[in-house]
Image (cartoon, rainbow over all chains, first blue to last red; front, side, top):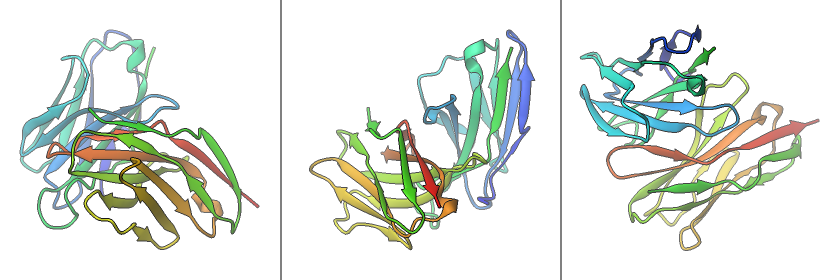
Amino acid sequence: ETGVTQSPTHLIKTRGQQVTLRCSSQSGHNTVSWYQQALGQGPQFIFQYYREEENGRGNFPPRFSGLQFPNYSSELNVNALELDDSALYLCASSSDRGRPRPHEQYFGPGTRLTVT
Amino acid sequence: AQTVTQSQPEMSVQEAETVTLSCTYDTSESNYYLFWYKQPPSRQMILVIRQEAYKQQNATENRFSVNFQKAAKSFSLKISDSQLGDTAMYFCAVVTGTASKLTFGTGTRLQVTL
């Protein structure tokens, strides 16, 4: 167990709908990164939040957006869902100070999103 | 941009034996970190081992060790005394700079058999 939690575990949505996924970071971590993992693939970086600001973004369209809250928890929002958005969404937390070491990310269990 | 290549989609090893998973990467950065992550069927990604590029000494964590060849941009993972619980997808990843964006390979599925 990493101490990173995500909700919900599973989600089924219809094409065109909107979805919000949630992540609580490990205690003491101030950075949250989101990844999309399609079936049989490695995770792909969506974006990262550091101290409530977006700090880097991967090759994902603007309909993927996020938030980080003062307690460092985070949300991933996806608008206008498409069939290709079906994937496992992983959240990872890390810290820029002390332990754990920089760049060391700890992952949550993921949210399985199915778009029909 | 960084790239990570894992050329072994699947591997199998008998319990108590040793197995080596391959990984090559490419980056133009001089300061970077390499990781191996394990993703069991339960799907939670677990950090196995980490290597700082500026360190010449290969990292070890109990039964897990790496062979880091910086000039060849190679970062293989050796698992000694394999256990059934080592059955999982293994991902190699690299991160550079301050954004902490992990770039993953496509993974190697390891099956440990009796």
